[in-house]
Image (cartoon, rainbow, N blue to C red; front, side, top):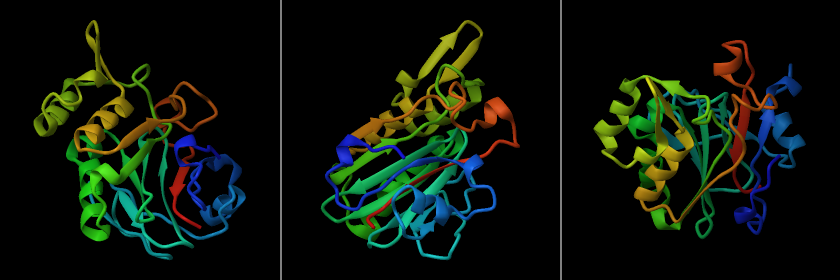
Length: 223
């Protein structure tokens, strides 16, 4: 489990990035308990979209983000190169976990999460802190121009620092793009933790290992 210094003073907050290879035949709740949060975890059925809803124990809504505003339940997402983005509002004791691949990030899932936090919980972007977890980095993520076009159609030049032309090849650092989008939306603090998942074999990577790879779980909430 990673402990983020910005959140260390928040009593009961836990978040982690866990290896699915260590959990064969076990439920994610058991893995969360091993990480120090012996409470249920609510997970969405991720579809690379932009829907964010309130998390409920025992339910798996089709969405790419869940929020929680009560102790005793954490919300999470699973990834294997896509970004896990964890959000908190300390004052309101609200948390959210968001799954963001390039389609979701370009389509506005991060902005949708902030809008959801405002509507469902009264959290203004300036009150929100964000941690972007391990994901494929710009070192390894070669993409086509259609990906950059998708970001620019929605966000203009906001994500330009994330793009790197290497001759005929175009690379993007999704976590830089996410940080740019969150900062532009007014989020009070944005931090990035962890390595590139494709470079570091301690993490699962779809790009490196293919569809048979495992998943990381990232979760957040007050226990």
